[in-house]
Image 1 (cartoon, one colour):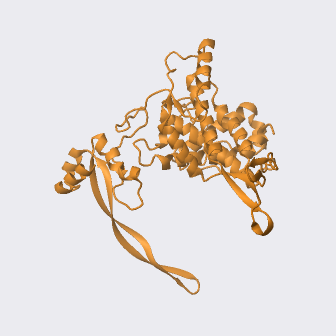
Image 2 (cartoon, one colour; image 1 turned 90 degrees about the horizontal axis):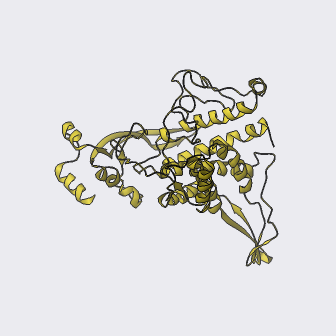
Image 3 (cartoon, one colour; image 1 turned 90 degrees about the vertical axis):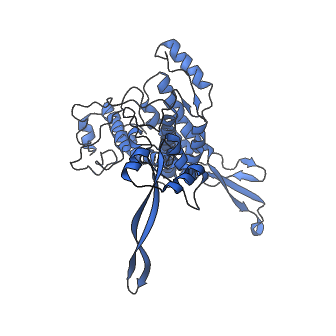
Length: 401
């Protein structure tokens, strides 16, 4: 399928998939020093389309199409992505034709006096590598899922291997999720944002592919038994998408093992440079994340990169369901960054003792509960406020952390 119709059919899934990738990024890094801050989430090409402009606080939002700007409350990444997608449509089809398709233009697009290539460049570090990978994975995952749900007329089950021997005692059959379709369409949308031929563009494309490989690598085989009285003489099996959370865990492991490629200095657009870049990246497994720069110190505030530091961040200390990583968050975010842990108590009001009354209402009581939370603060700031943890308790916390 070609032309504007193809873009319109898949654009909702692409935008939703990209946003699901960003939400997963926030979950995976919730208790890390870098916690997927909104301002850095701009999946875009190295050469442009990187704007830190946000919609005005007033003005109506446009509805009726996934291509429209959904207003100030929308996640920054989705707004950028929709503008990128729209700019691609506009570059191929004139406004008159698009208006006949009833595609609303984003309000104030582009913003007065601001170009889409303005703003700060995102660093080519391992965090940016993860953002590209998880976003690309989200787009492929959602397209594949929507295909399986019958949302697209031109897509269905992947039955290309049905009837073939898959392994001892089982055959391919059933309705496998069509990851081939999701992969192909996601490439058209996500990879097309990369128009450069330098090392940064190669890095982004490599990490986009790593995200798609992650979806494939986490697919699960589901089988059904066949035979007399359920004897399971043979089985037919098919592949299904996992929960997207598993893709997130898979890519978080890849993030920790990301490979640094030393091509940033002097890697330009000459034929020789492009050849060296292509040769270097082709020697690295497509499943691995790659980066060109070292990460900054996320303990510290860096306005240029849009980093807030860890001062004021909440950390976790107690809880039966906490993982080891979460339990050590106070040390990681506070102690190791030269900050101290401040204990704060607050009253929370919630509904409780709810009862159903015939017919037909549910009535609840309002219960108050005091909760304790922990935050990273500078030592001198806590001393000036006169609050925080008592000295004896602080000594215990220091020993523990």
